[in-house]
Amino acid sequence: MGKYKVILSGGGTGGHIYPAIAIANEIKSRYLDAEFLFVGAKDRMEMEKVPQAGYNIKGLWITGLQRSFTLKNLSFPFKVISSLWGARKIIKSFKPDIVIGTGGFASGPLLKMAEMANIPVLIQEQNSYPGITNKLLAKQANKICVAYDGLERFFPKEKIVKTGNPVRKGLLHIGGKGDEAKKFFNLKEGKTTLLVIGGSLGARRVNELIEKELDFFDTQNVQVIWQCGKLYYNKYKLYDNTKNVQVHEFLNNMDFAYGAADVVISRAGAGSVSELCIVGKPVIFVPSPNVAEDHQTKNAMAIVDQDAAMIIKEEDLDADFENKFSQLVASSERKDELGSNIKKLALVDATKEIVNEVEKLLKK
Image 1 (cartoon, rainbow, N blue to C red):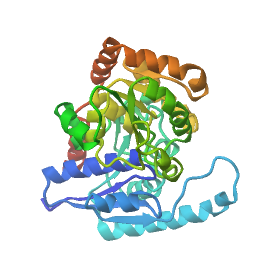
Image 2 (cartoon, rainbow, N blue to C red; image 1 turned 90 degrees about the horizontal axis):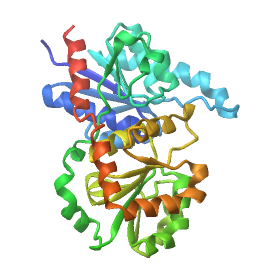
Image 3 (cartoon, rainbow, N blue to C red; image 1 turned 180 degrees about the horizontal axis):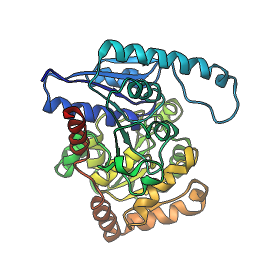
Image 4 (cartoon, rainbow, N blue to C red; image 1 turned 60 degrees about the horizontal axis):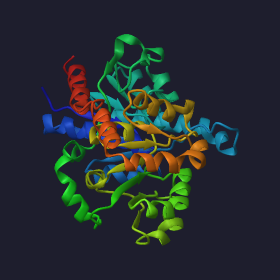
C-alpha cells in the first residue's frame, strides 16, 4: 500500500476552511506520510489561512454567481470553464486517491472533475440547508457527511452519514481554561464577560447593536470581548479599552475567548453553532438574514427548539434585546440551564467519524 494522496477543497469563509483543515489534521495523525493539497478560490481567505496551518494550496479563478444581475455575472461562464480546466490539470498532476469537499465556490469545479475521473469523492455539508454547489454534486459523490437531521430532502439517503461538523481541536477542553483565559484577556473579576462573534469578516447588524448598547452593558456590569471582523475593525477600534470593552479584528485564541465568556452573542453559521455546542455556554443567536434559504435561522432554531439557546432576529433587536439580555444575565439558573442543554447537542467526535468514512473509501 503506497502513501495516500488527498485533495481538500473548501473556502470563501472560515466556515468552509476550518473543517477542511481539521479533517486534514486528523488524516495526517493516522497516515503520517500522506500527501495533501488544498484547492481554493484565488484571492479568498483560504489562500492565507491554509498555508498558516502548514498545507500547500492552489487557487482557481472562480467566484460565486451573484443572485441579482450584475456585470460580474458576465465573466462567470469564463471563470467556470477556466476553473474546470484548472481543476482537471491539478487532478491529473497530483493524482489524488480521494477528494474531499467542504463547500464554497472552488469545491464545485474540483469535485466535478474528480467525479469525472472516477476518484472517490466525500462531501462534508455543514448546514441544515445545503448550498447550491453541494446539491449539484451530491448525486455523483460517494459519501456525504452531515451535521443535521432531515437532509435526505436534498441528498440521496443511502449516501448520508450524520457525523456532525469538525471543530478546532483546542475547543474540546476549554473547561479548565477559565482562569488562564481571564488573564489572557486581562479581564476584571466580578463582572459578567460577554463574547461577541460575528464570523471572520464581521457582521454589520451585530456590530451596530453592540455599539448602540455599550452604555447599557456598562449599567449591567458587563465587560465585552468584541470580535468585530476584518471589514469593520477600522470603524470600531476607537472603542477599544473604553468602558470595559476590547475590540478585536479577529480572535486567534478562540479557546481562551470561549473559556473567558459567561454569555455569547453569535451569528448562526454552521461552524459557529457546532463550536458553541461543544463549548457549552449560554448563547444568544442573531442569525444573518442575508444568506441562502435563510439557513442561519434554521441552524439556530434547531438549537432553540431544544431549549438550548436564545434567538433574537435582526428585525427584533431594537425592541427585544435589552429586555432579553438583562433577564439572562440576571439569572444564573437560566445561564446554567442553557449551557448544559446546548452541550448535550454536541457531536464531539465529528472529525474522527468523517475520517473513518474517508478511510472506508480509501480502502475500497
